[in-house]
Amino acid sequence: GAVVSQHPSRVICKSGTSVKIECRSLDFQATTMFWYRQFPKQSLMLMATSNEGSKATYEQGVEKDKFLINHASLTLSTLTVTSAHPEDSSFYICSARGDPLGEQYFGPGTRLTVT
Amino acid sequence: DQQVKQNSPSLSVQEGRISILNCDYTNSMFDYFLWYKKYPAEGPTFLISISSIKDKNEDGRFTVFLNKSAKHLSLHIVPSQPGDSAVYFCAASGNTDKLIFGTGTRLQVFP
Image (tube, rainbow over all chains, first blue to last red; front, side, top):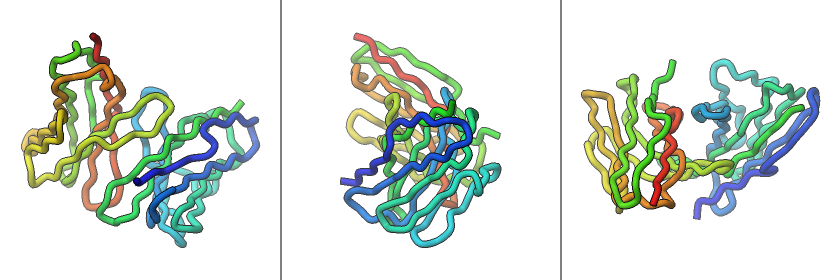
């Protein structure tokens, strides 16, 4: 149980375009989903926290207009990188939690490369 | 400001021996600590956790030790197996939802 999927697993896009990444909880209802970014050889950095049906809470330094997060249902959250630039190239990982006191379950990640 | 630090970027251990991965933190408000294992191009998978009310938690080959006064925790894997080769992240949380991750330690277990 507690499986989280992400789609796509890998995406290459041109500078200036937008990319949408989906995060789904497959066998549980995720009241809270988290989006992380990991640069090579660095830590996972929390970008934002989203609760179903409400606006996401962004971490300091993360542009909410650039990284649009939607958590419209209890099993799906999306992260849209708008007007992507090469410096946005990174590994994006989501996690989901059903129980407020429970563990976060991580998706497999999405490798974004902006050319 | 790196609140959770893993000062050893890599560790190499022979199969069958003990692997000890270390983690230090600076925020005294952290009260829950976790270890994750991560393979390349995959998301982290949860290994073991410990609450600040404990100083040790054991699960099979994995044991986590917490020294609150030193703000230090460690993960012991014994005996180490080649399949344990991965990057290990420690993470900490306090009175918020947020998990703060360390920078990871790459463990290689050789035969």
